[in-house]
Image: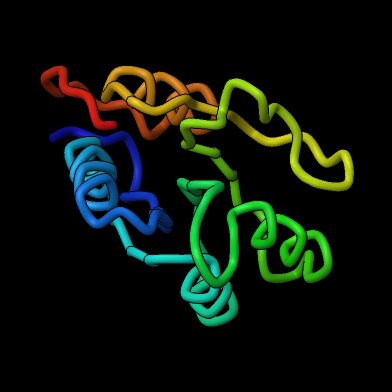
Length: 138
């Protein structure tokens, strides 16, 4: 995999282990590094300890929803500085804005196709472009 520039760091947040594995696989096929969180509580913990370039965030999760994670980011702007959030959710069609009116960087519906993620990441961070074969997750 050829990536222009250093690999980007992604936080993949989804309570479905199969979806989480597939999304992390997409990130790795793009030549980047995927860290995982199974719910919003784990995501907030990871964001408090590390910096990430992107977060792939499901909205519907136990303990702490994706919307709650976005509210936490709004209340703690220093933790998410430079973070691009891509909402990946079956509810994505109805969700085009973060809570409190803060616009999402991108919203993608499940099932997600590799090409959709590649194109959105490439549009938000052009040096992340890489070629790989098609697939989808949902």
